[in-house]
Image 1 (cartoon, helix red, strand yellow):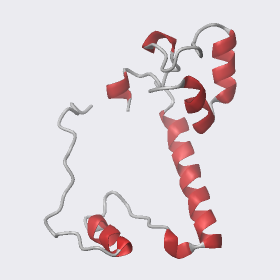
Image 2 (tube, one colour):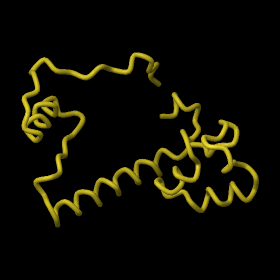
Image 3 (tube, helix red, strand yellow):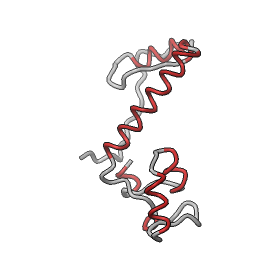
Length: 117
């Protein structure tokens, strides 16, 4: 996400802050005039930054995954599909979950613009 957004939030600062639980920082930056909330999406120099927040976003991801898992466990366990990205059989398993056949040769296209670290 950092490489294709120049290290800035993509889209609306306010929505991003709400989703990723950075509301206090959003209001401090807004009140200080450091970010903009009038034009959507804001220009990159008026947007919240993503650098140095890797741990925060990992924690949000883990929390959201846990909350979703707990919700489905209590209400409808069979309606949730979970797979590890590292699992070589994830596409076959997803197909089974959806009731369709995924060809053994199926593979997603990699992002060819990713220059890596």
